[in-house]
Amino acid sequence: MADTATSALSSPSAALNRQRITGIALMCAALICFSCLDSTVKWVNRSVDPLVTVWARYMSAVVLTSFLINPWTRPGFARSRRLSLQLIRSGLMFLTTICSFTALKYLQLTESTSIQFSTPLIVALLAGSMLGERVGVHRLVAIGVGLIGVLVVIRPGLGALHPAALISLAGATTYAFYGITTRMLAAYDSSSTTTFYSGLAGLVLTTPLLPWIWTTPPSLETWLLLFMTGALGAFGHWLLVLAHARAPASILSPFIYSQIIWMLALGYILFGDWPDIWTLVGASIVIASGLYLLYRERIDRRELETRA
Image 1: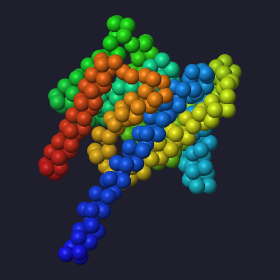
Image 2: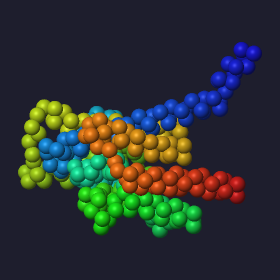
Image 3: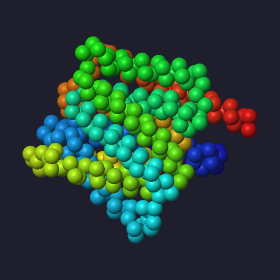
Image 4: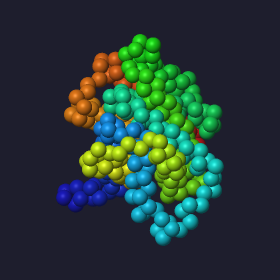
């Protein structure tokens, strides 16, 4: 009896389950890092220009990642087989960061996150024309419903939300293009090469602006928080890589929406913010449509496997 239990625990399926549980835990830890990153950005934006925060995020991230990605640990890491696409992707990430950090200065954490949740919907909408992926009726309906949820959060023309909501939506759109170009680059360049160009491009683009945007941080605490923006971002992305190495994206993706829980908690604890009912309703619509898209992807994948 004991031998049977031991063999069951050591079976391949049990090991696979442990791997997937570990992947989910790493994914949730990454989302906590990203939630803390947004909270830190919102906090320091009260005393420095958002573009200074963008520069600090890139500077600290480049310094930290250079310990792992450098000519000694990754020989030839700077060579790209699609340099033009790398530069486009890095520029899209730069625009996304500017939009996100600027919007966080004016929006609640949950408002910004609810709008950012529209990114998978935009990716699904663009995937047909840019990646040649099939977008059926079910997906189009889910995308439409999700975008209605975004409109519920933003409520354009009603004056209910700060105009920065449109900046956040622009950031979600550029992030969708960023995600697509990342998928396109995966077939050509390593993750080390892509990480290198992402950080370096942001640093190169922001540093010349410093004489015009510089605001001296008022305290040592602010300096430390600025450094933490890069540390949290770099650590969060590292955890994401570890998570995807242990569990498929189809299992990890639904947990992205758990980030709203951390944003609710941090927004209330740090800033005393609590979203209104329409923000919660809109966020629920966006999350439901995103989860339905993931469900449809699983069905389509099974159909393809059955035909094969």
